[in-house]
Image (cartoon, rainbow, N blue to C red):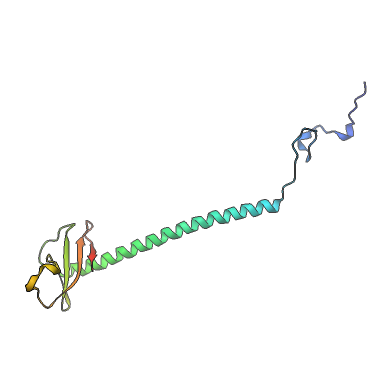
Length: 140
């Protein structure tokens, strides 16, 4: 019996062929490498831009928090150099006044003075003592 398949038109390793070798094989089309690289590059840029924007927002938040902390430190230094004639308690609101060049921390709010408010006292702000012993401005 004669084999009808021509040995010059067959291979021992059909899986290595760059084209389908039987009628039912999947069509193999060469990929456009430039298009693949372009899509991958575009996706990479989109993802990294999103991450950079997120990092930028986090940095802005940290800078804002650092600025607020710096302001609390400056206010705290001002209050601790002011005249205080009582022990300030954490979580309580006090009132900072200025008399000439000196500052004074008091328990009396500007609207609680009545007719006895000294003319030389100028209200600066309402402040609250925080648990870390820094001060927070409640109202200017």
